[in-house]
View 1: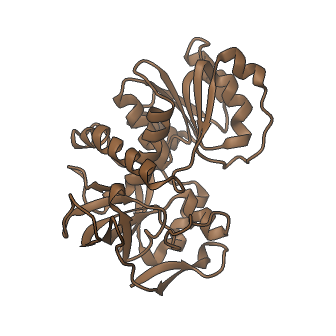
View 2 (view 1 turned 180 degrees about the vertical axis):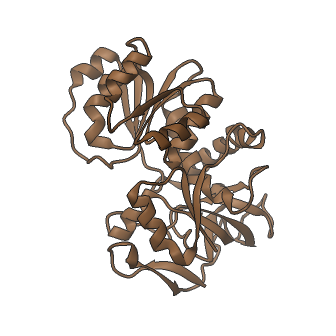
View 3 (view 1 turned 30 degrees about the vertical axis):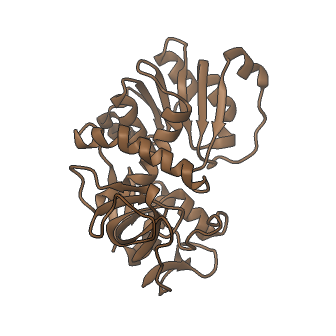
Length: 325
């Protein structure tokens, strides 16, 4: 088969479509013929040499895919050859075929075509596990989403609204904020021109956010704590703003607040399977009902993966970038 390989870390040109050995479905795995994958920040970090796949994972980038099952490994039940699926991966989505643990498979949801389904697994699993399973967002609470126009952000807005929360977002520019508003965001903050702490306090009568979903890390840590409500929960899922910052524990204590930081890729199989099962139970019905949908900025043929990476790094997109085979 062919896959996008990275012989030497570097810029987008480091992504090379090349012939590689065929994967084989092992115990508890299925083999998926890939219809599409999606581009994530983790893929960029892997291309640059900063984020190696976990031990035993495919060496090729791609943390999610959609496609059809072409083979079942030993011990797999509940799935059949020919099933249309999407999948959460530890790597290997940028390829013609990928072996996937059965617990990380999802059926293509009703109302979503096979290619577009590739935009779902990583963002839905990330948002549901952090905002709901860990941070416990409840109806009537306020959720602040940094990067509201990103793939993660566009999904977080919709899921927050679907459970009855008030959603505030930060994004850069009128176009991105307008799209966030279309998705249901109640409070729109242009981080280039506005202080999100002040804007959030103003919008909540001084209370702040009950849950913050953060992609920035160190750069926003102090201001995120200022923006949290009493009993607030900060969920850090990205480090685009750096990895080290000072933390004033007095603020944390005074607000009885909590900070969690998670990544999805290296979690044990049983944890990923539990998240995927929760997504299927809670989110798939919302998609089937038309209350939540994937937001796709553009789809590129797999050979144009370098261009898709350039677009992602420019941060000019809204929603997900797909790669099709």
